[in-house]
Length: 228
Image (cartoon, rainbow, N blue to C red; front, side):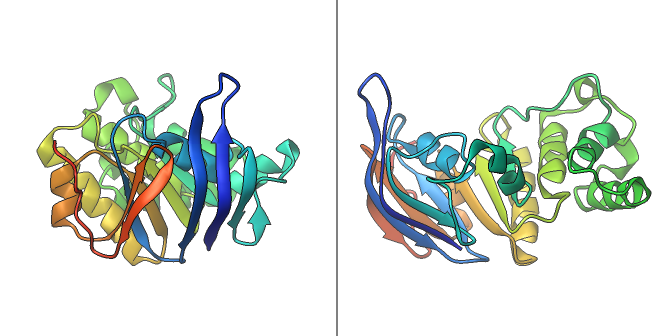
């Protein structure tokens, strides 16, 4: 599903964030991306949904080379990729329902289908009863559930989660992980950047460790491998 070959990312200030990266990720995998701060994890994640473009090399997702993808084609790419952020990125003036429905409206989904799809997804994430609330009326964990609902409303093949439990308390973090596990069990590929040692060591999946822009470890059912 995802294949990177000889990928490098050099920023205009001369910083090399990713250096000679090669990786393959199959459809349906759950992959943790770990490493110290400044290792290149965020750049690695952002290149997969074309927030960043590689300086050299190829990034293939479902047969599309992101390195050569025109900017006009990026929105189409992102229809098949769900992204979950640490800080939720919800629209504060829209209700829970409207935040999730917005993801369907931008791709011009038939209005007749929107209500059914949104309520089904909100039911999956356990927030059907809070559809009319604003993000400010929700807890952090509930806001992240809305973010996840929005990311999967288009039934993407790939969900990229960038520190999805970073702003949450431990108990809520486990709830979010259980939800991501359920989404993965339905066949969606999950790639999750995280600093949460306990989660990685408890819910075992493939672990890719990045240091100084290079992959230093790639293990099935691996450990976090860092302090803290």
